[in-house]
Image (tube, rainbow, N blue to C red; front, side, top):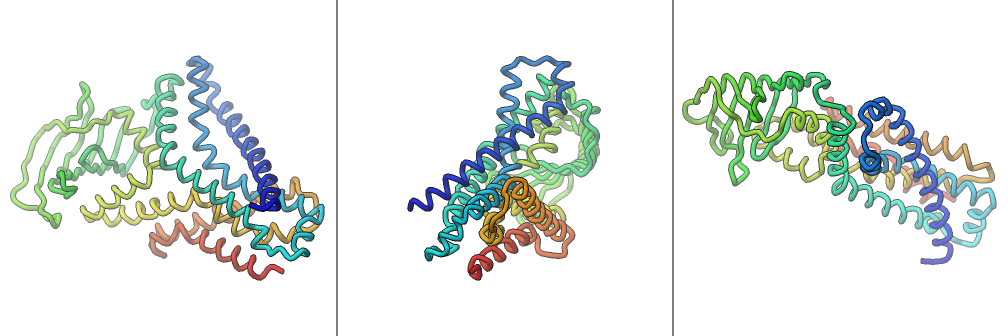
Length: 362
């Protein structure tokens, strides 16, 4: 790596880490103000609070990193432009692509790190946070409101629930699809309701059907007035599943869910899950897409004060990117554009605009 690359990289890394630290600190302050009453009531040990906030860092990082790096890019090139350093580089024959190389290189590192945190660290951290909320900060599941149209997997069974009432510990209008060892759906079970009592789930009004390899019903159904259902999750765990696991599920788990939905031909849910799968690929890589998109604008910065203007322009660009991305997702969920394509609308636009701008930048 050349001296020039190291110089630009050092400036961008220092600026990025500082802005990241500021955003994380602000996030902590906001969360503390929100949960302070619960903390004062339950008075958890200091070690528990430290563990709680340490486990929040992965989610905070994934949230603020895509904003931090664009701001850092604008600030760094604003400072370089204010001292005519970018102009001197270009006057000496260094191309804009070569100047942008260390920024793109660092963006790839940050995006790869974000993807790793999302897939390997985030779920475990969120589980610990939820456990601390339930057992130490006393945010119990009993205060949770009813949930409709809940879907989840447990062991080898897929559950579709019409209504979930955490306070009553009941599931209503339940449809279950059971897999065999070969990952084929072999059984469909319908229950009017399921009630959790004495550490087990008991279903009422159960109708069970056998399915062939094509997913069609074979033979006569079997009926039970009451039947125990093998569901390991307790009601409080289901609250966690609906509020946390779906939002932070790994790509591997989402891919498994997509395969299962294809087998049972649940195409209405498949489209949304496909969008979520692609969104979870796009989001950790958004830092890279954003930086490529804004580089031509950042490199055109001349003499100006880089502080607050960099903050404003960086936030605006990030806001435009995410607005565009979620607009594409909304179009996908509305069936207007392909589900696989909808989360990629903003990245494709920003990358195309950025590469075009770098090529034609004089």
